Length: 395
Image 1 (cartoon, rainbow, N blue to C red):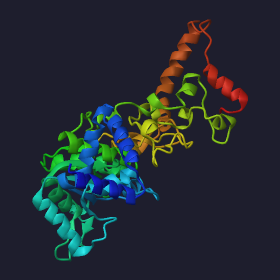
Image 2: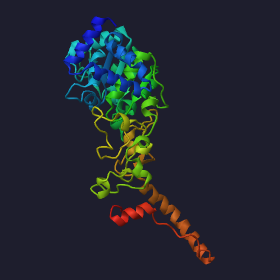
Image 3: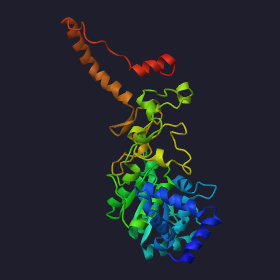
Image 4: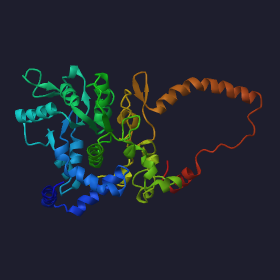
């Protein structure tokens, strides 16, 4: 990079209260997030500095609450991640861009016509009512207006890579939760169904972590290829380990020390939240490592059980984290039965009614045969549960 460009970039950072040292430190954290050594920090810095020249981007919203936008623009002080997103030449970002109406549409159309951009898609893909559940430009009676489906298909056609940010964009998220009246789905399943073959990088959680967006954009800019991904199109470096693997409360889990009720001594001691519904053992994200809000904290550190918003199965109907993880403050989860979502206790009651008669008959036979004497004593609960109950923390 020419010296004048280098100086201009440093001045750009300085006007936003960020030093060159802060910037390089951030590039180091991105390297770690991408699984690279510190030796590539200069390359990452160069890729970011030249980002606006190399790769324009479009940020489009489907059926969303704009929570992912809020996450990306969360800082009320100069934030390096926010600055990186600013310099990556996001030519269209309908939620926060100054342009509106015709000028905004033109900015998107010009970018699509040139091609070679990154598409960042937030929110679910609204298929319901022949796509008329989401319109851009007023509605079916307005000339030039388009459905959200048309906007996605046109933008996806010229994109080099697509980032589906947030769980709604990955598998429909909240919007696709049962009974899903808008027939919401994710970007990947929708494009597959339409025969549009474009690389999609899924970044779930509700909302998405802005650090992950920057890491993936830098990865595409610097390496020119997609990251290694799992079966759900999630980058393995971000979604390769469970929250439980890196949770600071894991020691309490190993010791059998759990919170059974909020407001108790166990909660004050930051015991493991598994018993009150924490989905950390089955949720694959690096939230405990990257954390949120400029790495200040994250859900479990703030005292909340993990509710599993990183869990996705994009190509499976009903595989969104809301249907799979609810109820959030309970270890039980809904089970789909004959098109309905019911609790395991309900299933057990029904099944129990069928099995009970057989068990009673079997028991009567055992008594008659004199085969019910002796045997190992039955343990009503685990030792650590008895201990917790004795202290008044269990139920």
